[in-house]
Amino acid sequence: MKVGALLQTYNTLLKFSGMKLRPIVVVLIFYSIPLSGYAQYTDEIGKSSQALIARADSLMENFQFEKALSLLQQADSVDKEILLRLGQCNYRLGASGGAIGPFEQVLNLDSANATALNHLGQLYGRDGEFSKALSCFVKLIRLDSGNAYYFKQAGSMAMRLNQVHRAQQFYTQALRFNARDTESSVALANTFM
Image 1 (spheres, rainbow, N blue to C red):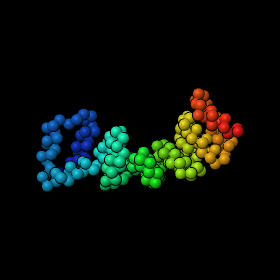
Image 2: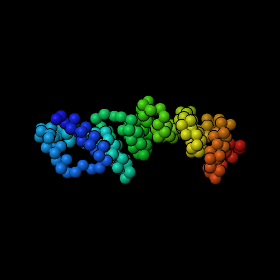
Image 3: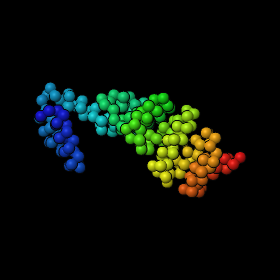
Image 4: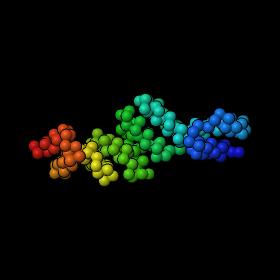
């Protein structure tokens, strides 16, 4: 049995069994691999996208973004989930330049990815690209029109572009969702000064 097919069989058994395989099944799987293929098999498990993502998520949960970034950069292939985590690690490490590229690539694959849009909006805003930032938050509002945070951020970017009337509309909408949001209240009041 080829290593890839064996790995697929193992993953299928895990998926459908809903429980951990008993040691005897794992032993049977390992004994069916010729010894020369064992290293390749363990490499495939170690570098599989899901395993890599799981390890990176664990590191990120423990605020070990540099280690997670290093791990993700070793991926054999890069998919949307790996790109998203590369962007998040760079974002958390304050590396705007390293975060923007992966987030933009995520949006090329999935234009409705809220995490990438939100982070890009924030990064563009920090970098003074207020028009791009506003565009991200407007897209987020289209995806989730009940999120006051997106309206507040859109209002902030509109103000930086001197679009006062538009900012007032965004802040007003944010306050409709959360009337006690003092940040939006103050920002709205400042638009009239």
